[in-house]
Image (cartoon, rainbow, N blue to C red; front, side, top):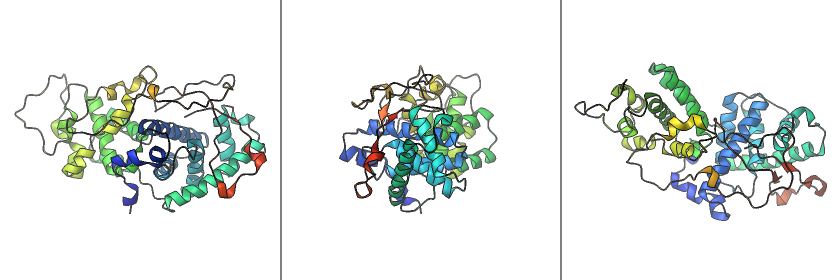
Length: 356
């Protein structure tokens, strides 16, 4: 049932953003990460359950497999995904409330300063509704979005690990939504990658390598154990792979290379907590072009707003769970809808603080 939403990794080279615009793969992945960060911030401010936010993030990635990021601004799509998720996940929020909180995030103001009847909120309601129509078409009204977190719970129940492994795996699964993994692999594969990476991070640099953890057969017991004050159990290190009985094709996907690239692309000065993950060497069997570039080197839009962030607003915002930098404001980008053009007065350009 989910096959139409599982794309080969090579499809990232052929997305509408890359094929029909000036976007590079690295730039699109960077903007996807920023869009999901905005989505999570919006959902958290609205008090939504994490399950609704994960569903919305999955739809966000599915949308941009079929539409270009140059035609639909990531913040507009994120807001529409959140609004749709409040309806399908039975955690309803009024459209005006979603637009009001979204406007607060866009402008960097406290939500209490955003008047619910302001023209900007009215305009944003129109944008959310118009984008939602395109979103529904892109999703083919298929709202099912399984999460790797459910698979992680099964792994946690089946094997009693160090609590740090649970915490790491859960956090990595959260961060996986800032990458397009949810449209590249089934949830079970993603959950296993998160679990294996979490074990490797907790066990330390002298523990079994990723190659050993995802190999088709366990390493020979005759091989010398690398020096370590607390060597990990070979059975424990291969638990996720053996628990699901993965085939060799599946095992190749468990490597978590995309996650490792994502973490390595971040500025370590602003994301010190991801250092244990960036030190993990990828499997030697993985051969494909690198998808991510360091976020600090990704080209930024030439068109920048002249306005400055409001007083008391920081330009710093997480790229992942752990922090990062973001460019200055960009102008409000209204999704192009030639057949349902927004009336001219509603096209007032406002400053858009990039909180993603």
